[in-house]
Image (cartoon, rainbow, N blue to C red):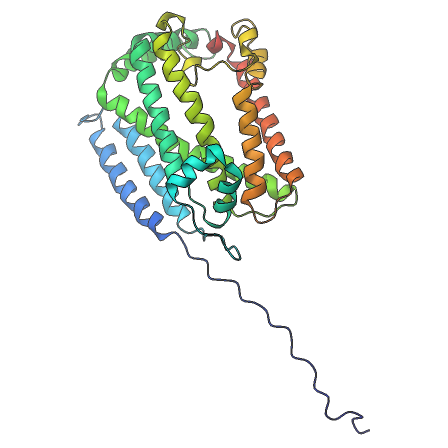
Length: 333
């Protein structure tokens, strides 16, 4: 049979738009290599035979770990967002998170930036713990911790006395205090990374779509305003309040009592105390910031998904804190 319509031409297949090139943050690779080298040097100077840096092994290991983390991060390609807005400056982002967080999170969706926020939080935390140690004295903090260790049944007495003796000597060393500050900064990089991974898994479980860099940037900036407000107030209270009235362990985190923890004795009811401390102004503010950041910072995250992830993680961390308080109740006394 002849073709009834010999001039007919089938339409061309639809053009598939190529995905835009997504670069890798190569600057993190070089920063990671440099930190690994610096960490190895610090470890070598902290070896007992040399001992030029007291606590250098732990500090150097922390610096090396941060280097490995940044090196691994350099292989994660940046997200691609259609028609991205102009990138906000670092200063505008740091100030805007207090006054217009929604705009900041929307900008972080296309331009995830986080180093400045994490460094500021880490430095503030390190400065506070250093001031706290000097205010209450290393002897009191170490002796209090050792006494609480002695009340724990499965810790042998010789380990308690070793911790008491070595801990006091180390805490008085300037290099050890500097190492504690460095580890506080490094710890925040890993803390944000862990929380960002949980948020990303939660967003995917609730049917959303988000890139890891978007999640990491959101989690970094969620923590910034809460931590700064908390630590600034804690600094003021630290020098207004008598050191004898400050708890040597609980006070290391915060001296701000904006929650129901004021109404419950941490010594008599440690589990209830943990629950009560999660109900406060700053904790609710952080919940709202987290949900807003996840909703505005991802490719496609609904409000219900953002709040679902936020509340789920809040409950999980609350259960974990309650378990720790039930296992080690003496440390809250």
